[in-house]
Length: 505
Image (tube, rainbow, N blue to C red):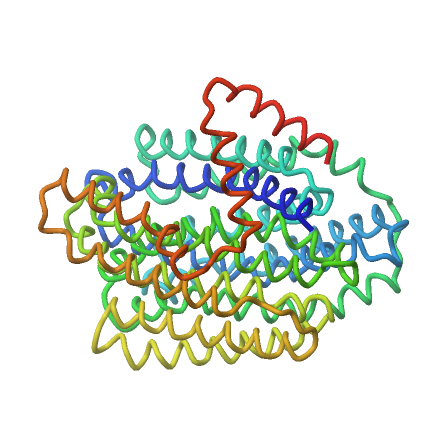
């Protein structure tokens, strides 16, 4: 099992570097997006609504084809059909994307009126829809790289796309004065470049044939996931849709900035671990040590994530004041700890629902996420009129907590995994106390404030030690890691051994 954990860690780090690049580029653009010389606060709110609409659209457009590909590619009964399975998934996605374009492009004026009470944004929405259709194709190719365990290729390809999007976005906004439209033109260009760059790799992995029986099985598995994905997208977006309907675009903008910062944790940690782990989850079904691997994945990912939550929450005040060019956004720092806690429950949901994936109970997942979405809508309607952005954040936390508990309950019923619940509870409670402590330190001078916050982060793993969080074997590995990497004279050798070890895997 140790070898699997090491492999997962290496893959997660590589995926994490790629996902970190996404957020770094996003942070580079925030000063531009919040600069009153280019965008108003309302423009930032409109951009948020368009991004959320893209998220909801791709949940339908992708039709869970990447997840079906992920589940079937390493299925022991279909190992000889892998190229055919990928070709069917890719072909189906091309057809679905084209159908959505044919239906939606003539309706962009009506969509603009529905979202913003004006048709002025119809051209921008048109580019957003095209970018989303291309992103759906990107997702299929990205899934192929994941199932083949090619994190380096995955990161290089996506990083190339991101750099093009970044540079083109800056050029179009600053030098061509295209406004929000330029953001989505850049995305269209980046997604097309991604497809072109990986066209050779894509074609090499295609077997140009169609097996109707396999495709029906994949569709039966994927359709409930499509509904689940759509409900999950609604769940992720409903807080800002509700703010747009029940409050002002100003509150959408403030909440969205806090959400962007907190979502660093989801993208860089939760999603990176998910990208690395899910293919292994499928490969390890009914193998020795599989359940212990699932249990440790949940525990270690929670530890890494909570460390990130503490760091992001403590320094949210400094981060927002550094990157936001308008003082209107500065109050968003209060929301970051709340939204970061919500990400913790998202990770718990991802890492404790393996039983439903293994047993192919996708319909159960669909029902859970649908009910969660309805609950989130009701909570937003109840809380936003009274508490505005704090109400939206509270609704998100409660919904993700109950969503995780439901996934955990039903997953354990069909495939029991002995998760280490006491340890997770300890790190959660300690982490929450440390995370929210930063809200009481904003009146301090800058230097002592930064030093105190850094000390709080460093103290986290040591506090866990006093609660008997670590096993003896884990302490020995931590000690060995510290000894190995603290020797700066052997730093190159250690890097070389890491690289060689990865290649051997």
